[in-house]
Image 1 (cartoon, rainbow, N blue to C red):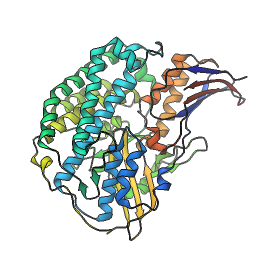
Image 2 (image 1 turned 90 degrees about the horizontal axis):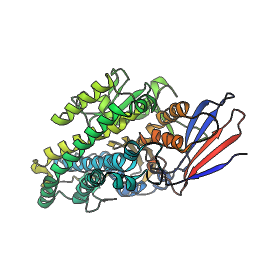
Image 3 (image 1 turned 180 degrees about the vertical axis):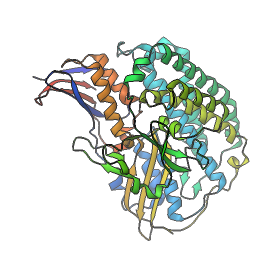
Image 4 (image 1 turned 30 degrees about the horizontal axis):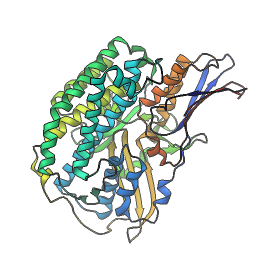
Length: 475
């Protein structure tokens, strides 16, 4: 008979999921599956709404990464209007996205993942969280909180709200940055640089001393990587073109346009998950597995283009012996991207356009289809709208960053389970390591399924005969 073990506190992922671990006749792990049990809804109930409302509507998919949807929706609207966004508006949109990358990555590293590294995988789960980190290292915890606050305040200074700021619009943005806002950012940048450098040194030391097994086990496998790059092949987060590279660093496909995404991206469906399984079409399903997000962005670019971040990028690649392919390095990549974002913010502070009032182009419905792409903290985000002559939405397709990583997340938890699970009993530390494999990707399950309702993380151990021999719920 299956038994249930209740484990607190709540798991440190955004959303609700279920994991099944399948054993063979010998009692060892054969496979593992990451089920997303929330249903998709946003794409359907957007039908009939004006496309001009889509930025405000889709931002409500998630409170952690609303900026990502604001930007993708606005860029899709730009194409429907067939207008060129003023230079000031593009720079301001970039500034908000840099604030979003900073705050989201700081949340992932300091609040959700660092308790594992600093307090221990098998430490008391009641303490293995941000509150335990505050008790153990209050200065580090405070620095992480203030770094996230910096990114959130950048968003607020532009959009008047930290969350769901109705600021980006088709054709541009509603308002520029104020001089007072610019000065606040300049005043807080030195502290933010200090914090991210502290975190980078800390994490690199941990990799060298304590986390070498995790690098080898937490999602270490070959795959493709996809992300935006600039015209010169540098790191990009807002515009540019799409590129695929492989685990040896070879460019597989380049200069791809989001307008043609259906030519190179397929979306498979499995009966055991509501989250779709995107794949690279030329390789088919599931061989066309690829990863997106911080690790992918650092792998697809030639360089970043800012001094400090390029030094860290070179060290990152040197430590991996070439192309970093372990998903555990997502944590490392996030810290490098925070440094990158801060350097780009610093550059923008000297640009007069960020306080210019010429921030919006206007027009009517000139195209009945628009496809926008942007880099969310978790990876590449596509919005695809079809509208009628009045600009009312006829059809929507959203391909979310977490969805791109679905095949990779399933492979990661299988790799971890094979390493740590022995027999039907589930130790709490094993549960935490499986969760940590998912946390490498910092998934946003509400974004990926546009969900409603609540459900805890649920892990099942399934014997070869299909019998559920153990269950663990994390409420």
